[in-house]
Image (cartoon, rainbow, N blue to C red; front, side, top):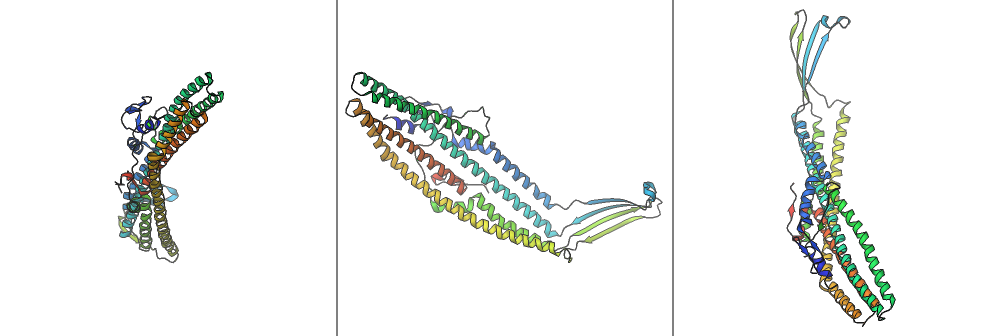
Length: 430
């Protein structure tokens, strides 16, 4: 039992993981590298792929808004007796082109460009969300696998104590109750192993879903660094979140979009131009010639002014809505960053207390109880109590460590940057 804690801490080595008892060996080929999984998710995750396609679709709208409307070609046969096509008195060929007021094309192009940038930040936000889910599930898998290793070692050690208790019972040194308690404890450990195995398979299934891997694929062992590292500064994180979080940038662009919509709505009061040419042909050849056609729209007609005014009202409402959403998003992100930062800092301090004081003391208590039981200085109940306390504290430590790493992953999502634990911020490409 004295080596269980060391076994599980060494389990995080990224090369060849070997316990001091040589009971666990994990080849490097079976170790799951988190950074490689992140890169794989960025390439293969279906949600991220869908957001990339949406981004491409919005980019493709920009040249559409820059161009002129499609020209219109008309062909007419006039004065046909009884719809006799060949006896028409005139044939007309007309080509018309609508030319919007020059500033309208620029505003429409700007609006399309802003919406394309919206989709870019939507993509970054989706990528951050997926990566955060991937990391949270990775750390959950780590927790389950650590508990599996712990329970397997405990099952081996409890089987040894069952033999000791049985031998002592055979010699009349201990009551049968000690043997029965050891058997019950061993059965409980084996039952817990079944539950942990199910949770491991479920965690791997979720990871493979995020990675878009085939159901027949397999995953190895999750690892995390033994050292608990978090040196980020709260003020720097808040500044980074307000300038780098894709959702914040997206909502700030909503105000720009509304302003552009308002400009375009005001430009709808400006007339559009139509020009065209017409060719008239008479079957007899008596009348032939060209005509030029020009016209303008009348957007300020009394019966159409309401439509233009409604566009302006819609744009103003859009600006007010976007401003409110932007302010709300900043407040929400600020609160979330602070909450997660305080949670991570507290977890780091708690983990340090576990490693420095709680776990070593619990291990010493268990070692003393084990020695005392084997020498007949205490009863089995005292040993079981020390054993259960040690196991519970070990599992509490693993749970706390998982919570720490998951909170860091969620904090990375909130600020829109990765690897913030070291205080080195990787900004998203805007």
